[in-house]
Image (cartoon, rainbow, N blue to C red; front, side, top):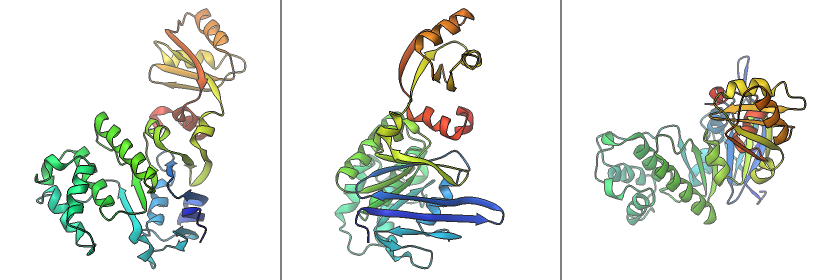
Length: 305
């Protein structure tokens, strides 16, 4: 076993007839790392996660967990893995506590006190006796996360774990994941919330059309390229004008802002104002993860979401 990696994906492929959903990707996740797995819709993320969790048999390649190969025919290695993929499956007429007790039966050595610990950990102590049919989407996600953590896994695989949560809930889950990583838990996180990923992930891999586009440490990727960011009334008009500015590239309208690389802030302001577009705010700095994502995948903001 390579002690450096908890999870290894080696030349992994999954083809559905003529569709190459995953087409030869490789990466490794180190112990205690929060690893972000990113890509636009239809890029192959969910299929990859399915193969990691032995829910889908690969066409070719290999997945290793804790140095051992995993497949639908060899699921034992998954005993030290917790997962929350899409929405958790709950028994609606049982309470949060009862749902956890039901899952706990899979782990005979689990102490009864662990149920209370998990409810406190995911912020559901006050709702522990409520039927889960009355839970909001965010509360269900919290309980699903609690189920994944119940047996103290060494690796946590999460797909959109903050789905349906309010900002406070997202903040609490981010802090929880960071604390878990500090305690030695390895976290594999797939999320559309790139701000969230940028805040907590150590390393990211970006996939598009089943192929790996880029991977590396977040701090290095984000610091690679700098851009001008302007706030304007019409981002589409500003983007159209900036495409005419010599040297400009990586132009992305996003909300009230437009980012553009390859040119100075002075040149951007002069060009826009000469065409009657007056920026209300101008800044210069590294491209954030969202704009790097858009650049690497050639996606518009709407397509990304």
